[in-house]
Length: 203
Image (tube, rainbow, N blue to C red; front, side, top):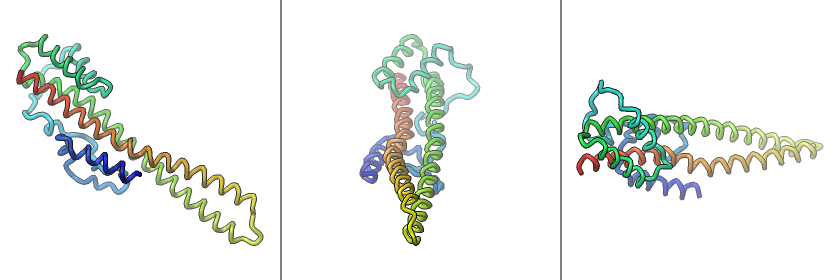
């Protein structure tokens, strides 16, 4: 089941135009996801022109717009309406202005994603620790079974502990498939917001 689900996620990942932001193998043997590990995305992959440096900060209301655009619970339709309102309220906005707005939204998304990537690493280490603990319990069970006379009380305790930890390990392993999808969804979110803003510039 896990291989099927990860294959589906890989298909989603490879089909997105933003997939090229994952540019290299992670080089991290502990990384559990099928997607390459990249701690931070590159804004240059998603925005076609250089964004001017040293520009004045965005007005507070546009900072709030950027923060809301970064939220996955805000639908793409709502995001388009928000960007359309910005364009209507700022008819002089050009590519550079929308670039600054996207840069701010992108920063929010990238921070969220970096936190998730770090969390996945911790998640994987916990799985590795749990796996090692299971191996120790199984080794103890083998020793108990070989003992003469067997300690049946302790064998019952170890068997229950193994069953409980196996359930936890398998549940977490299934959940990992969906956890691994989160960085991809955030990357797709950033790409979608960029396209919405670029379309607003062209209109």
